[in-house]
Image 1 (tube, rainbow over the protein chains, first blue to last red):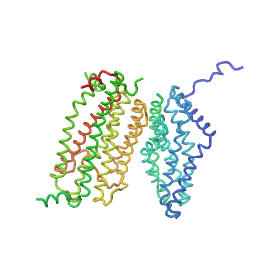
Image 2: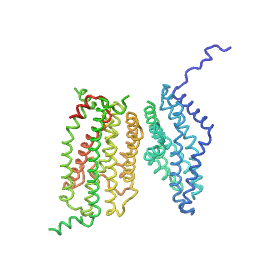
Image 3: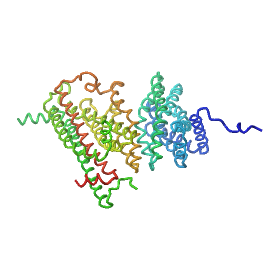
Amino acid sequence: MKPAAALVPGPPATPSLEAARLVLARDLRLAFRRPGEIVQPLLFFAIVATLFPLAITPEKSQLRMVAPGVVWVAALLASLLALEFLYRDDAHDGALEQYALSGQSLTWLLFAKTAAHWLLTGAPLAIMGPLAALALGAPIASIPGVLASVALGSIALSLIGSIGASLTLGVRRSGVLLSVLTLPLAIPVLIFGARATQLAIEGTDYTAALQLLGAMAVLGVTLAPLAAAAAVRISLE
Amino acid sequence: MMASFMEYLDMGGYARYVWPAYGLVIAAIVLNIWTARRALKRARIEAIRRLAIKGRPLGENTP
Amino acid sequence: MAWTWFHRLGSPPYIYKFAAKLTPWFGWAAAVLIAGGLIGGLLISPADYQQGEGYRILYVHAPTAWMSMQVYMVMAIASAVGLIWRIKVAHAVAASCGSMGATFTACALATGSLWGAPMWGTFWEWDPRIIFELVLLFQFLGYVGLRAAIDDTQRADRISAVLAIVGVINIPIIHYSVEWWNSLHQTASVMKLGKPSMPLNMLIPLLMMFFGYSVLFVALLLVRVRAELLSRERSASWIRDVVRA
């Protein structure tokens, strides 16, 4: 028989990190029970990317020039759609309130939620990005560059989007307002991300643009969860 | 006299850019002044109405 | 001593009466400055050697552009003050800035377009400064839209305050965009440290217009803040005095 003391778990090493890890795991687990929600943004991305060759021209040489823009705009729109389910379920069933009341750092918990959300939507988009670029005439050699730029950009977009989602938490039918608030903040990411992707497709050196993109992602990681936590607290008051 | 005034109005050929620009800004200023004063007027009327109804003006979040 | 002054600034009835008294002063000062700026800009200042008479749009374009950024900063700072110290008057100030900021920004873009058409040959360019000024317009409109979408006033105040503060990042981007990118806009000739590189007879009307707009903004802010305070306040006594007056 184990002594009673051994049955009681000790305090976690870093309470906030541990709680964040649990939230991350929970979100991922819950999301996999509803795979439809994960697939839909990707499907949307594919459809939107398809619209452009149909609307503009099927000429690969001309498509190559608009490929970076198309990939990025489609990714941006798909991310905006996906943002709807970042907080929706937890706000609905009161879990978000529990997070705020738990005494844990809401900033860390929301960062964990955003990280889970990126793993479910942003990362798959980053993988689909090069595929779309290839379909739009990009050379195979551009794949690493396109992948890296869309990956970094989608991290920044997820974080910026979490701010927009937290601001519109209490608003009915907030889809359009969410987009209106998030897009202006996302424009610098779009500019540099599309630039990096374009340089990758052209075959020239894209490290400078990628570094700027990385800097934006880092800025987002450090500041966005703070703003999101502040806004969530206000919405739950 | 008239000729130099017409010349002035012509703004060296740029008249159709300069005058609309000035006109737009002045119109925007006038519009802003008008809407601000209208907002204040409406707020006063609302406050008087609330006072009359309940004896105290109900703010937006009064229970 | 400083604290009583600070507390008075946060008291709605005090601010209301203070604002009512100040408004005419600011209003007339604005009228004088703007009239002077218009006369100086349209009549007294000489034609530019490169752009001829067409450059006179500068006297309405540059001040509106500066104002658009200044109004946003006022909105953001008032939001921060309201959020941190929970001062209602600060939130009322922020709320009053939204629509005025949008009009200044729209005017800056429109007058810029009218200036660009003859000078750069195009009504619109995707130039960095223009892009980010357009983003600023979207920010103002988004702010107003967010406030309108939230019914509870207190929550609307605080949520939009977070939005205003987060969006501040665009202001330095607009200002420095001409230095960071190759832009059609020229680099700063007035708003830079050190002596401005513009002749006095052009600089003075320009500054008069800028200060005229600023003073006008304050005057209109005083009017709108009064309207906001009236529609938010619960306690009867000061509203009764003020409204029956």
